[in-house]
Amino acid sequence: MLGTHRPASAAPGVAHEGYGGWTWKSFLSLYTPADEKTAAGPLARKRTSPFIFVGADAKPSLDIARYVREACDQQPPDVVTFLLGINDCFSANPNDMAAMDKSIGAALENAENLLRAFRAACPQTTFAVGLTTPPNAREAGFEANYKGRYHRWGWKRIQHRLVQRMLTQFGGREAQGIFVVPTELNLDPLDGYPENNGVHPNVSGYQQIGASLYAWLKWRSQSAGR
Image (tube, rainbow, N blue to C red; front, side):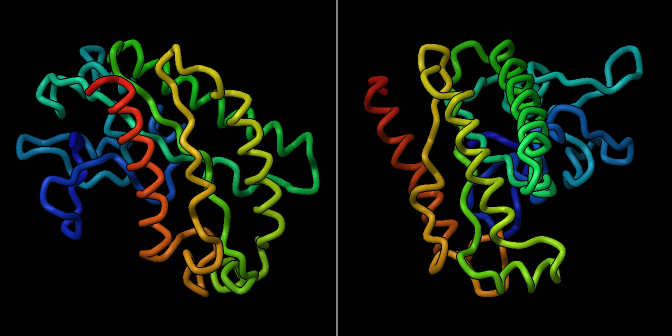
């Protein structure tokens, strides 16, 4: 596995670039000078995208090719999986379809920009885009987190619309190396969540998401003859 993020809680050999609270846009542009790489290696990634580097002009910019050279030992990944969308659209107004679609549209534009940058740097890589997962079936989970500011039914409507738009945006693009993974179908919105969290699953729920990605990856490996 390739990546700069190796949490202490992860199994040996597990590396990735997944960070709680991040959006498609975060990976394109999030940068804070204090989080630059040091001689000892990359710092904990909380405020700087692992794909942003300071160039010869002293300005930070997106550079996937440099990331592959420095973080992946010049080995482009065979597959990159993406599971984003919640934080891009969570605060959209579910009662205003036009505003909701505008928020979703901005997220999908950022997704396309990130995928395009990856494709330019990694022309042979396969990209798997996971569909945004559903929320906890219990309103109590949202009340515990947001104290009445956000509600389950509001986010559920946004998430449903986001999945519709993602299917339209990314469906049928296998010839471009872009595949949709139905991660939202295998997550149990009741048993896959703790009672006190609206959008973050419990261990069982995360395993269900992992099983969806594993099943897709196994199918893809077999169909590609790998």
